[in-house]
Amino acid sequence: MSEQMTKSWRRQVRIGGEAGQGVILAGVMLAEVAAEDGREVAQSARYGAAVRGGDATADVVMADGPIDYPHVEEPDILITLSQPTYDQYAPKQKAGTVLLYDPFFVVPKKCEGVRQLAIPATDAAIREFGKGTGANIVILGALAALTGVVTTKSLQKVIGKNPKRRFRENNLGAIDIGAHLAGQAKEATS
Image (cartoon, rainbow, N blue to C red; front, side, top):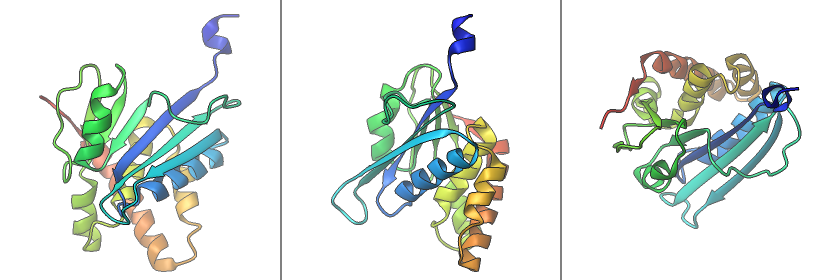
């Protein structure tokens, strides 16, 4: 049996930004969506001491089989919602990494072999909802549409579980906005 046939599917996703941007919530939701898709999942989070403005990072490992190490070692997908997390993680990525960044907060730099895509999630959230909250859900919608790492159907199902109707409707709308932005994503050139 070839190595390709025995090797199971596994993806590592890191989401980085500042406290208050919903980074940790996005990681928890992504893990729940991956589980809804039938994947094995491990999720962890790190955040600074500041309530707002400190760093926040969520890691999600998903696989078709058992996960032997539950932390992201080398992300296959990196999402950055702030310049400090971009500057910290982007230059260290392996060739082939897909990097989604929010151009409202991030100015990309050259990262050899990394596919960098601008997803204007905060601008879209401000236009649609009057404030930047919801950008984390917009970026998850774009992630699902661009990478297929999770299905949009499962993302909608997990988001649809929110008992507060206003949040549920806004978040379902944010997924659609993210999918639309994915179709317009522009690759960074430096």
